[in-house]
Length: 147
Image 1 (tube, rainbow, N blue to C red):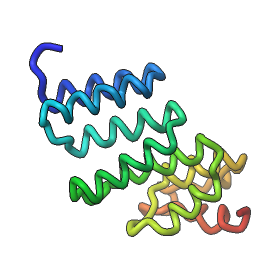
Image 2: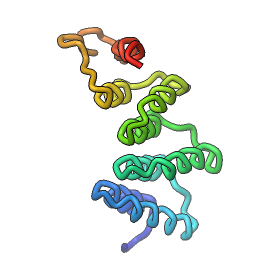
Image 3: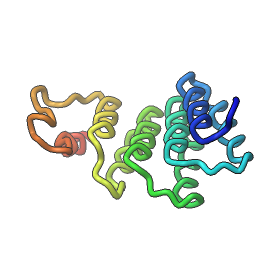
Image 4: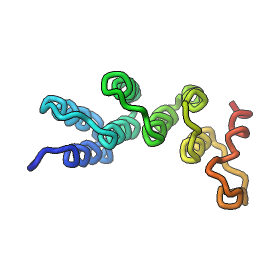
């Protein structure tokens, strides 16, 4: 890697994750920390996404906790979405639902739809956010009834 900065590190970490090499993403993340560069919001999104796409649930949880406690980040909706995706992809649907219910922010449509997809549920045809003119998806209560 040429110039090493947060942009190049996040690109490399994300690239390894997209290619299914979660171990490579984690190794790069640790290399970056060894260079005494602090991870930013984008890097945490990239590494959490890599963990999600490669089934590294424990590592993802540890990184999420570290992001909050060690680096004092307030998770963004992207970080929460990565965690819901991580749990849902690994078949931990009840944990994913629990996580959504305990999030201090309103879940985004993407998070709820991801969980619905893994539960084999679909949204009501013809009922979309544009039609309802809202930021929130009202399929959330319907998903809760299927828990």
